[in-house]
Amino acid sequence: MMLFLDTAELDVIAARADSGLVDGVTTNPSLMAKAGADIKERIADICGLISGPISAEVVATDAAGMVAEGQTLAAIAENVVVKLPLTMDGLKACRALADNGIATNVTLCFSINQALLAAKAGANFVSPFIGRLDDIGEDGVGLIEDIRLLYDEHGFATRVLAASIRTVEHVEASAMAGADACTIPPNIFDALVQHDLTDKGLAAFLKDWEAAGQGKI
Image (cartoon, rainbow, N blue to C red; front, side, top):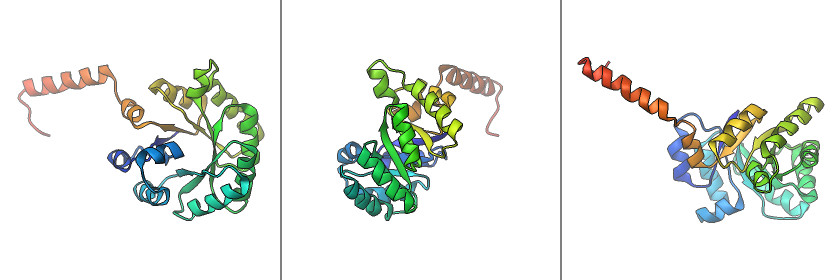
């Protein structure tokens, strides 16, 4: 499963890029507004840090406007993925962009029917929002499982990108449910490696090594 960072902060991305574990980045208008950056300049900078898929979202709400903005964003770098909302206009724009070889990520997916339409529109990624479904008492991870089954049964190439991740358990469950990718807030990404037993075990190993009078290898 690919791991994406969900942020538009350059320092945050740069600090984790050298781990070799970051496969891509997702952004949205809220994250861009928080970063206070020009979207075209910021996406170009992010593409310079990460060679994998970088999602950049349109802000137009009509199909023609989305296509125009999508073309502008796609021209920034070869690894830009144009992010579109899962509306009828968004699907029309997805189809038009896909037909012209532009990669897309259809976002704000909350149902199987929406995922079906995104795949038929030629989306490279569909982004089901786990956390927001959990917030209203529905099963976010269950939707990931259902989309995986749907796509496998019908041979759709669209990748399932688990989004709205709130916990490390969401990441684990998404992986087990068959998500192709998971976009993660930086603090959750950092927490994936953490376990008390790992820390205790390492401390014990180092203590024994030091007690034996050993130096650097």
